[in-house]
Length: 126
Image (cartoon, rainbow, N blue to C red; front, side, top):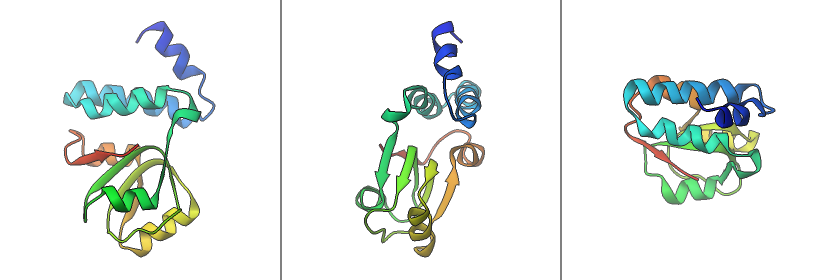
């Protein structure tokens, strides 16, 4: 890892993010899965540039039973009419509640990385 990249990672205030970035890059190399490298690069950016996705956007862009990955936070504005699995760095309380009541599930990026190491069948939503 370059010195510039290492400095970016060390400056993160959330202690979970640096280890997540490192594990995403390792997974990308081991499985030859570019999706994990893309997510790691998005998380290396400043926190104000992280994705903030509302449920209404999830509803418009996701299909029934799909796995959606948000490199940021899922917010509870809008309605969700589909049962989807959502992986994200964080969830608002109302978003978790609305996803669960539609039969979906909320998981962390680490969990989805362990479930789908190759990254196939995952849609990134920003």
